Length: 211
Image (cartoon, rainbow, N blue to C red; front, side, top):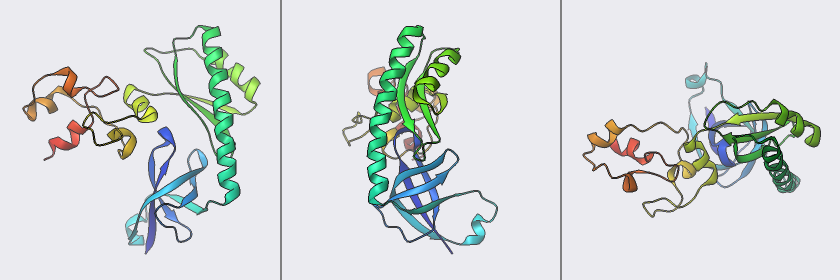
């Protein structure tokens, strides 16, 4: 049997399921080995499954419960991300790039820093990357995201009044929503009621259509 834990990561790093190397409870902060490197997250769920069902599936490992030092380093990382965000915004203005910076995230192990941005078209940001690498002295990764991903990063109250918007609260994968989905639910084409904070059709239209 395998004990799997569902871990929420900061911002756009989303939610993932990992094999627990040691007993973890809901609410525990833990370190997880991911494709991006070692990251810190919080356990929001757990379940036990047959090991055979994951025989040919690649799944990450929750390495251990976070220590006080890990939490201190994570808080310190937040100041570094804020500094990098301000510097990147400044260089974007200097370079006059049509980019909107959404989030800056240091990987917990310090191996790289990821800049998430939105843009209406393809952008040549090679000179910007050189500026960032020269100033921050670490591996730079630029990742373009869509309007839904940006809303997931920024967060905010849901239009239905249930608290945080769905994309930030629990959705693992953001799917596009079509007008066909709206018509199938016999909803009036009222942009004010159907559009989320991202300016796109609300994500909840997809999972409500199943019922």
